[in-house]
Image 1: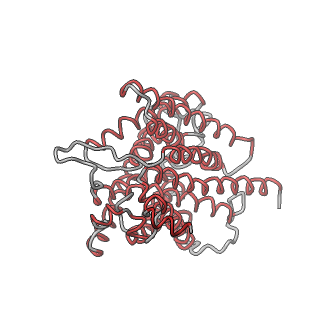
Image 2: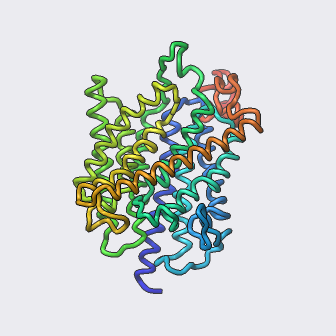
Image 3: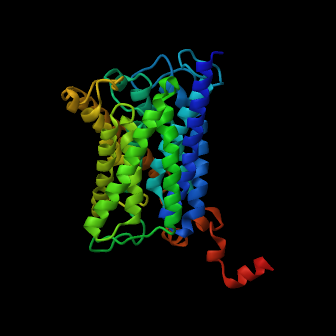
Length: 423
């Protein structure tokens, strides 16, 4: 075994660990952004659904994305992957498998953010299986698995489209079919703020995601050659920083005060935006891409709210709209030296060719993810008598109605019960 093979394997395994650790960031982000009565439910279903996605990826997901004998939609080999080596990876295939499994789990976690505080656990279970088998692998195959978008030179280095936009479009289908949470909108159409219960949790979740993103983006080099992963990590951090600053400034200018959730979403939007382009653009462009992402997320969140689309954790804005911008950005900023996939962007003499490829990839991937998610959820709704818990259960909170216990038991039990427990 040569040293380069070994080092590549170690580096990508570290990247996989960082990406899986992002699940913890999503738990804190979603729980902190929603109400205390649903916190235990959110934590539990996030772990549970990552388990589902892992098993489905092992059974069919990896095969559908990277398998041989491919048709238009998927590959058709390497089902129930057993850990054997596959030629041409340049690192342990088992490590590469775990790395890709982590990405699939993150996309599903994003999608399920659109279900927050009102969906049945049975719906999470069924949709997780079908998303991991029929939605994510198709888009990933088209772009990363040698599919038709890859053949056209679609640039998406670490998944602004594959992971983030795919998850966001599934979340959009869910929010439309589930309808808004009780109390979100008044009869005149005006919106009420349903505040999350812990901004510190949310901020810590964002920090964990920020750190995990170095595995997400820099790990996607799948190689230690020339230390290029350091350049990718630099672009990633600059974009996140610019997104946070942009969100801080725009919220201060428009609202008169700097809004903490907006700042946090700005950092995430910068990270999502740079995910497609982190290996294809110069550092100054990474700052611009992240800054625009931070501005977009502020206005996007208000756009969806005005249209009565209740998105509790801003998945549509952070992962969807910022994912679109990030994917399109390479069509403007990709340099001739760094565009190892596709062509240079418009600002570097490449004309509109790459921008057209990027737009096509975004449009087709988003449409596929949304339509298939909508159909799946509509069928589940019909067969199971609804996607949503009852009004009584929603008011009670999903901790108790779905699991029979509270994430914060001392906050909800009576003083008499607390005294009994402590005696």
